[in-house]
Image 1 (cartoon, rainbow, N blue to C red):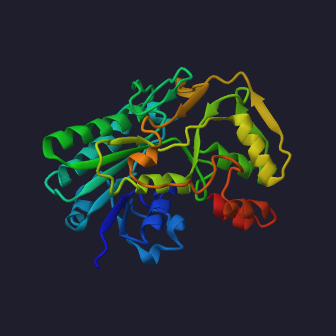
Image 2: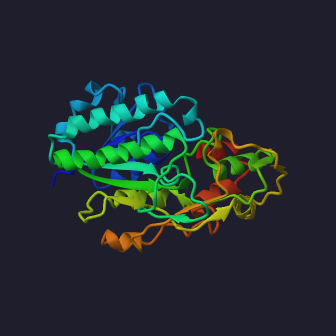
Image 3: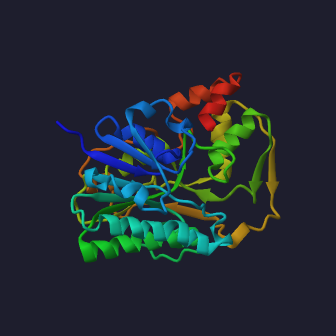
Length: 330
């Protein structure tokens, strides 16, 4: 029986590579990435998937394969929320416009379903300490969140106008293997790395800031479940619904890594771009989330109970083998 085909835009990145590895058992997986991208994240299975390199802003680079595609996962994004306000025009031009071109390319292809991986935090804006659900109000205060929300709204519009099939998975703070330690994303990975090389942990504020975190395998498992969902809902917060402070995270990491790091609190810090919230947690209004998807789902890891899956914890416990640690973090 012929496998269905899945195109993953941004499939060589942190989350995209895990999604590709997860799906390749049951689907023909094609990843689309920028020219000359690093294949480090996919090196263990790149011979089992198809790889297309090109420019997402140039539809010609991917339209030739759309006739043979059943599903598209959209993870291609050129900005991060911390710096998106520096150049809002670039954020829109490099993310929203190319996504509109993609939607125009598939609007006449009735057999394709597109799953957009959105942001579980920035689309809502300041939560004022409340747990945000799918139907909570949206007042994003960074360009990254605005552009993510714009894509969500255009998906709704194109479904209304052209009957495209879509689903949206909003993710909170994802952590796990292949996350890079020095790209302004992922305090868990960054803190672990700094502990292992005996660098101090720099905490902006007093460490009481609360966020929710999800292990990358759980995030991918949840997003993948949107493939065959046929219910009425279109947007899902894929999260644990549990919040942890920065100090909680540090304590959990110390237990795993067996380290006694120096912690430097910077209480005088003024948040860059004014997108700092004391507490932010998302949860699903559809309780429990996977019942809506008609799937019995058990998370692959209990939320932050040791910070890592056993396999990842073992890598970090081998702190004398720096090469293994670097490979896990890079």
